[in-house]
Amino acid sequence: MRPDQGATSTLIELLRQRADQPAELPGYTFLLDGDETEARMSWAELDLRARGLGAALQRLGAVGERALLLYPPGLDYIAAFFGCLYGGAAAVPAYPPRANRPSPRVRSILEDAAPRVILTTSALRAKLEDVLPVPAGTEWLTTDDPLPPALGAGDLAELAGEWRDPGVGPSTLAFLQYTSGSTAAPKGVMLSHANLLHNLGLIQACFAQTGRERTVLWLPPYHDMGLIGGILEPLYAGYPVTLMSPLAFLQQPVRWLRAISRTRATTSGGPNFAYDLCVHKVSAEQKRELDLSSWSLAFNGAEPVRPETLERFAAAFAPCGFRRAAFFPCYGLAEATLLVSAGRRQEGASVRAFAADEIERHRAAPADDGRALTACGRAADPRPGYPRIAIARPDSSEPCGPGEVGEIWVSAPSVAQGYWRRPEETERTFGARLAGGEGPFLRTGDLGFVADGELFVTGRLKDLIILRGRNHYPQDIELTVERSHPALRPGCGAAFAVEREGEERLVVAV
Image (cartoon, rainbow, N blue to C red; front, side, top):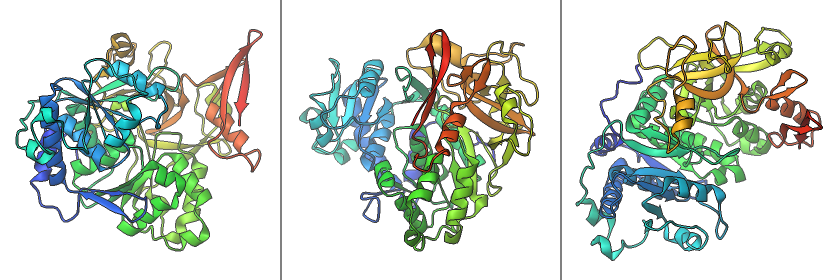
């Protein structure tokens, strides 16, 4: 299966085609309480709502503009996202700020994206209007209220008949995916319809999807894994998805596993911490009600994949029917749309040990008692459409030798158009070339190496701590500290360096 074999050129075409196809199950099911209370939406219903919202945005002059989405997780958010696409506006998803509390992140996005319209619910608008500084010329559109009289229609169904195809193409900007902004102002990654469709095809190919899958996800729909993997991919590959709020999962992690068990889901996953949380929070009594035998692909990405987490989860839930071979570590980032590399379905995780002191010297040397690392898939696939991964020395752009740790560079049709209104950063990040001139490549900022054709990620280039000339990866220090006392919670520590008296000093906060 090739990742570029799709017959559609835009997400609008994709949804319109799906809406015309009969379906046994609703495209989207949202668990309102995280358990069994459901709201459902078919692809045809989504198409109708998207046409209505698209027509509303066209009347508001949003064609070619940006539209900020401020919604709680749910079906309204999905309809609003596709409404932006149908209206010819670039969607700008953002996590809504807490009630009556300003959000520096949302303010930064609002200032940077300069949206023509803010789409939200009436309840959220009432809470946000007084704390969100909306620029002049930006309008609110509440999508759960009667439409404003200026739109000349009573509801979205009536307005849907007036929708006109905005004439977008593969290179048209579909949405801005803002980065986390943990160390700087968030940057808007520009993703086109072509970027998205290629990556959706890549996911389908790497995950070996057949259209008979069922999936369950709790991931935030405002970020790449939740939006692209949880909302767009099921539409692309043609299978139903059951969604829940991230808060519902965090409150009771067993809800995720119950939903997998109840719906007989074949595909689900999340970051590494989600598996650890289930190990620590799901009781023996709760395990007795679970049947995870249908779960054949358990993807793990977005943060370091820890071998010990995989072992703990597999041991804890084997009595529930979970199979170790279901583990599916993968690697990706927003600047490459989502997925870059992954393993093979039903082969499980590939874990190997390397000498820790050699990795600190940017060399990977196998060692039986070394640091265990999980491979994140194959580093090279000669088939057309698959990403090309290069490992480069960040200071010279020279290709790294075998087993040498360097920066991971990526070339693929999924690589984004760049950062919104940041031409210099776009050129530095998306226009990299190897010392011999080959490129362009995306500089991921991640460090890693290739061993026996597999990609191993060791850490972030910017996070690397250098003490007395030696390289230290903060996640390794944090893990060592976590293991030092049972009272320390996993994932709740931070290691970093500060300068004191002209010398770098290590700080670990727990």
